[in-house]
Image 1 (cartoon, rainbow over the protein chains, first blue to last red):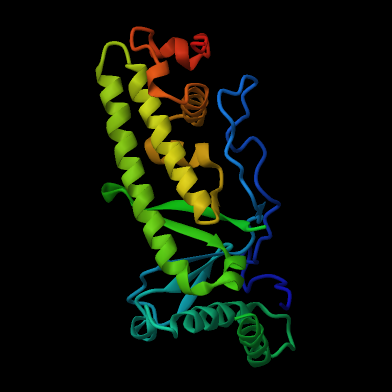
Image 2 (image 1 turned 90 degrees about the horizontal axis):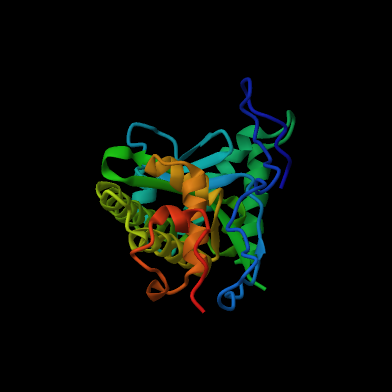
Length: 124
Length: 144
């Protein structure tokens, strides 16, 4: 994915979080009382986040606030594809559309969206 | 080995205990199909958890001496939710702070409830005659 050099306004660039904050999680006891449950899996660090929200008055399919991309659940196009095979495609398109507005000067948003969608298509 | 994706929880509607959950964009690479419905389910689950915890803590607070079993129950609710998140390949960012902010209590209180619940995995191990303050400060030995 092409990098995101920063937002269009002050302080609107995409933040890359440094990771899970220290002091989180449940502390291990010095006197375990029962065998712990095995937690397999690597923890992904938070970076850019995605969520779903209603924006009936917005004309956009998605928007970004700080480091979170919100997919507009109220958009008629999304309502049409929700719970269908086309829903993932709509989400990918919405995300790539939002991210494409953060490209460096001279980079083509169309190319970026095309590559982003193709990359997803190849994985899927 | 499966990966765990972070979730952050924010208030959507405080009066209705409704929450908005977000996760890492990286989750898209592993099946965007289910993200919305997964998050919607977990948002509802979290709302139910917060409601149950409010009742639990309010009930404990109404008594002259908080019943440690109610605090055990609160911890059990939280652990159950965190386990369900884990099963769905998620983990909650800043769990104690998140819960504390939504419940209006200190994060340290949540940590103590969780520590207590972990030290006493079975409710039968908790003596209701012993005040919660003793359990909270880790001054009660576990029954052998």
